[in-house]
Length: 255
Image 1: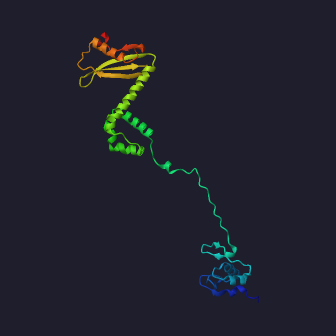
Image 2: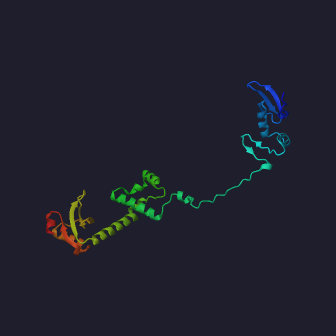
Image 3: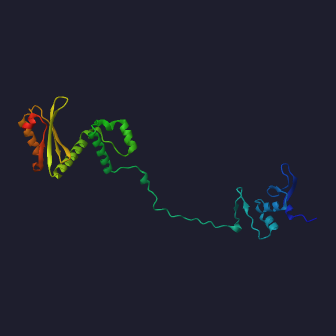
């Protein structure tokens, strides 16, 4: 009969236990149960965290270096077999985005440009000047650009209106001055209040609205119409004037 393994000095044989087909053995140091096989018991003893270093080196030899088994089945080094942990410091990337990149902002130039586009839309489309004070319009522009400030009704009817008028007039004069030849077109009409108006258009050949005024109580005789046309011609470079076109009214023909 072969001699008994020395491993049994560290385990208690439990025999057959309910629920297990093979006989069981229990570690004397941590009460852990394994199959009652010498190789199974030896494997457990190597990693038993409750067995002393004296017991382990007495069984496996004086050069044995035990490892402590953790609950997550990973192993920590002992003091005799320590591992140096090196911390690597990564340089901070200089290309990291600044928080300013995520802040919604608008420059004064952008504010002026957006404001000009808004007021031009109001004037050209004949919209009411209180449009910017309507709550749905405020919500719309708040979604489009939270930093854009809508102009007030007062600004739409005063300073901004004057600015757009001056800019439009300057553009008109530049277009007329750059033309080689121009044509003056005049037409008279009455509005719903039976007020008579006369308007003037200059073609460069691109048509440009030049002016319109109410004649009031002045009779539309040939002489009065001719004087009115002379007044308009005096405001432009008459050397470029190639033709004058009117409607077929008798007073216009006489002028």
